[in-house]
Length: 305
Image (cartoon, rainbow, N blue to C red; front, side, top):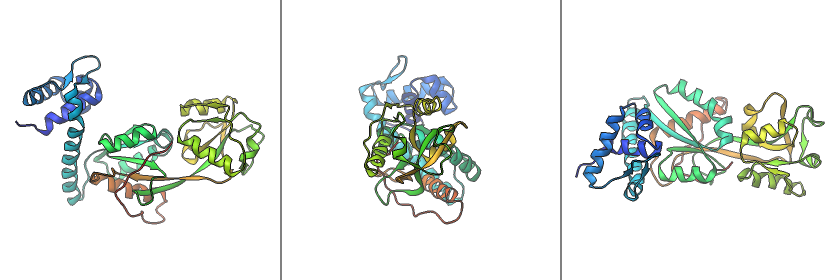
């Protein structure tokens, strides 16, 4: 039996893209070449791995093989990147998972920075919630993730992200330099029902106030739009600043609360070598080049909102 990386790469692309056409576009190959590679893999294994439907889905055997295919391809990329690193050049693709606020607020600037420093390295971004990100990192779907408040010592500390009050600019408190969480008690309070809610609840507890949100809004864009429409106010992190329209303000909040943003690779597998380069570069960039990056320590943890 001879199974090669090209076969595994084609199989994985079809399984993740849900079709041969989308996989071909992703791999930069013809659809017939992708189909041939998958078919040859199935012949080697003497069993079908995919159900040719719309969308394409894996068989029971294909589902069992998926994580091993990801591991094999990840290991092959690591070998290639180690060689590239020795030659002082980084090439290939790193798959980075982030939560929506980080993905939309922080990552675009990092992508611009990375493209300037490592023009031959491609960073693909996957947006998901905390549970999805942890699973992607563990299963090899993602090579790296920006986690929120992981265990101490995991990865590279990028920034301290403080929580802020989000108000319409014409709100009575819109011109204040600091907003006490108690001053928002008369406004309908909107919240995102994930780990952000736990942190905002803690802010209220520290102030000795009840936490009684008027609405829970999962989608970040919808949440911001509702504040913009005057339906209520909310609390978001500083990372969301670039997402706010000009008629909203993001104001320092009392009690003070922040979250640690950490870029890390998987906990139980060797990191893709390029992840170390990206993490160190991001840490320096976000600190304004005022100091060197924190040491890189392989690790992992659950992501937040």
